[in-house]
Amino acid sequence: MGGENIKSIFEITQLIAKRSEMILKQKLEIIRPTTGITDTVTTLNYFIDKLKTTNLKLNGDINTEIDSTLLNCKKWFVQDSTN
Image (tube, rainbow, N blue to C red; front, side, top):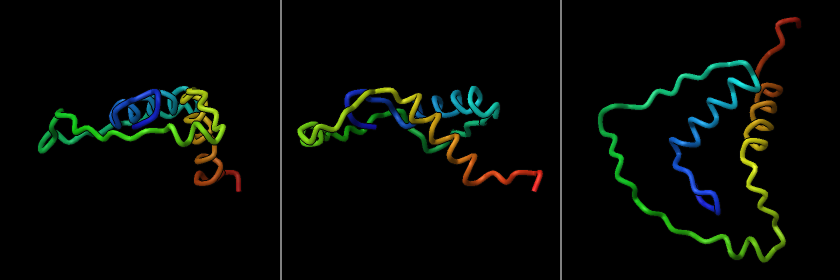
């Protein structure tokens, strides 16, 4: 993932699972294929300088964003069993 706080997709996956357990009390199992996976990093360089010039505020609080997304997913996709 890009920006100023660079994390791998796997690191983001682990963070989402951790936040899900904390916020939703739902433990997520991360299944990562054991074959065909390489830990070699292919670099994708891109810059966010143009975004910064638009006064976009990058607060770097990824936990808040993940929590908000998880709560919205619960609201949008989880049916209430009382209905």
